[in-house]
Structures are given as structure tokens and as C-alpha cells.
Image (cartoon, rainbow, N blue to C red; front, side):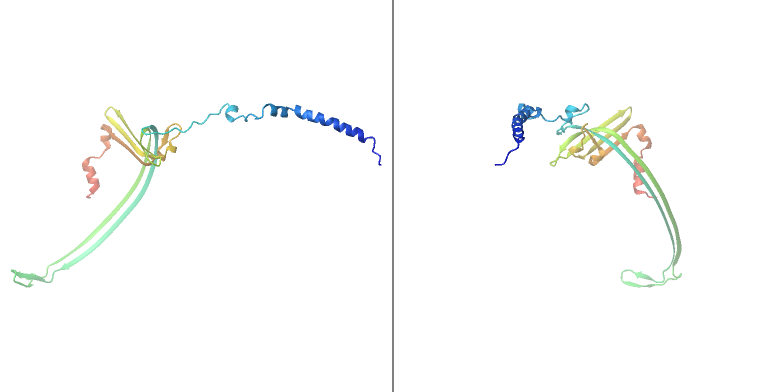
Length: 229
């Protein structure tokens, strides 16, 4: 039988003594104790709890019929056109009537004599037409107008209409607006931009002494339509 070294017995005894100590250390650890005391750990801190500047998003507002929205109109248009037309026409003509007919009632038709000779005509026509046009327009329109949701389509699109009237002394400004937009186009501040409205129809009508000073009369309007000269 082989001899077992004397050092083996102390080593084995030391190993048997450390096993209960290791198990006790595991049971006394903070992680194990926390897990045993609270099986479910608390959720991590959210941004709302840890930030001083956090603002929670408001849920989208439900849009109903006859609600009021604010329409911000901002239209800028610029048109530049340049055209030139020139037309010349020269014509000469000579005409001679050599034969003619002579009627004796309704019974006979015969060739008529031209005693004074064959009638003749001659002439010339010269025309020169030149036209040159330049057009440059700049238009801008910016205002805010409250509009009412007058209809909600089956697909959810909104029909908006608005009207405003401003009276200062004898001057009257009337604004009207209508169009179609999506519910998503209405921002959190209840504002929809004019560029997000489909079939946008904007009308601005001015009446009064100032408007009458630069508006055309009915005769001038008819004259511009037919342009006889």
C-alpha cells in the first residue's frame, strides 16, 4: 500500500472548513440579500424623473366639427415676362374686269359690251406692326385668419372656411379663405399653414374711397376685354 504524504490531510481538512464559510459569505452578500428581500428590482429612472427641463408631450387633440383653427397665410409670388412682336406686310394688286353679263329681264342673259372700256383697279398696301411688352409683378400676402371646420371627409381630411371683415372709416377690407387640409397639418398651437391647405382659395376685397381711386370703371373693363384698337 502506497504511503500518503502527511501534507494531504491538513489540506483536505482546510478545504472542508472553507466550504461552509464560502456558503455563508454568499448568503451574506449585499446582492444576494437585496435579491432575497425584493425579488423584483425597481425600474430604472426615466428621463422625466432625472431631467429638470423635460416636458411631456401632450396627446394629439381630437378635432371635431365646427372647431376653430388659426390659418397663417404667407404667400410670396414674383412674375417676370418679356415679349416682342414685329410683323410687316406689303401687298400690291391689279384687277381688270374684261367680261360682264347683260340681263334682259329674266328671259335672256347675254354678254354685255363695255363701251367705256374694261374697268380696272389697282392698289398697294403696306403695314408695319410692332409690339413690345415687359411685365414684372411682385405680390405678397401675409395675415392670420381664424377658420371653422365645416366638414370632415370620410378619409379624415378637414374642410376649413374663414371670413374676416375690417372697417376703418369708409374703407372696408374683406378676407375670405377656404380649402382642404389633413388633421396632421394642424400644429400643437392650433395653427395650420397656408402651404398645407389643398385647393386654397383666398380672396381679398377692398372697397372705399382709396380703392375707387385706382380701380377701373366698367367702360374701361369692357374696352380692355374687346380691345378694338
